Length: 143
Image 1: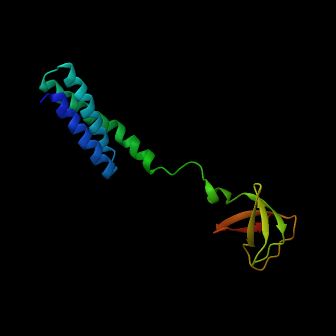
Image 2: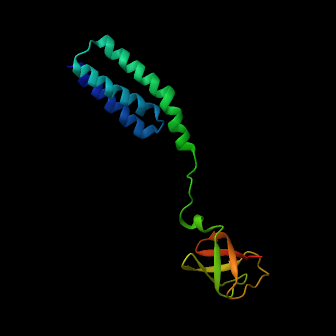
């Protein structure tokens, strides 16, 4: 069996293992095995193939893995969905009390409740969205 086929099988096995572990290290080593398969296909001797594999693996794990880990652990820069509505201003379309009401947030009409249950916010007031509970915005009047 040609050595480049062995390196391809190793690359595939490491790639599959990476899918199940999500560590980034096995994926990097899989890429090193894939590059080594290319070197083996050129016809370099097994000693140089092993050297290429070790150098690319070590370089990848030392240089690329910390960068990948940092990106994986980093929180997304932008909020989306209902969490993006928190902090936005809204316009009261139906009086908001501690029990119910309606507000317009960014062109959409939402059911709303006053964040402070003792407040009554009149129609036409501008409020800030403090929280979203299900499909209800908890709002507080702007000062």
